[in-house]
Amino acid sequence: MENLFAINFDKNRVDSLSNLALAHIGDGVFELLSRSYLCCKGDSTVRTLHRDAVALVNAPSQAKFAEKLLPKLDETELGYYRRGKNSHTHAAPKAASRLEYAMATGVETLFGALYLYGKTQRLNQLFTEVMEELYGL
Image (cartoon, rainbow, N blue to C red; front, side, top):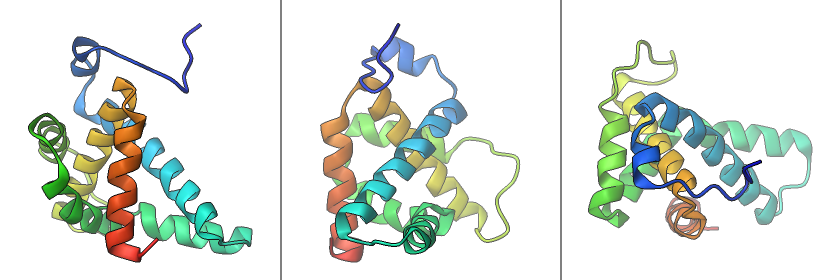
């Protein structure tokens, strides 16, 4: 059985997945990183942790995250971001514009690809740098 905490797909296997499949796994990765960040920051009550996690994981917040993230990406990473951003999604949530939703999907697609490549150090580096810029870890 494959170790699902230490996936290491090759490029062909990652690229064979649809944009939305990469975004699907990336959504979970982004949420786990957000929850971990909040726990490390010292939030203590479940109510506070949940409220703050919801605030970080929504499309408008992820769009702000994308704005800070883009200058830090190399060409390959930028390609995955664009691939997700340009995906044809059928609907955006009421609380987000279509652009915010597209940018959020780009972030999730990038995070999904990095996770599947096994580049957890790079994921942690990007996530931490952007969170420090946005919220002052």
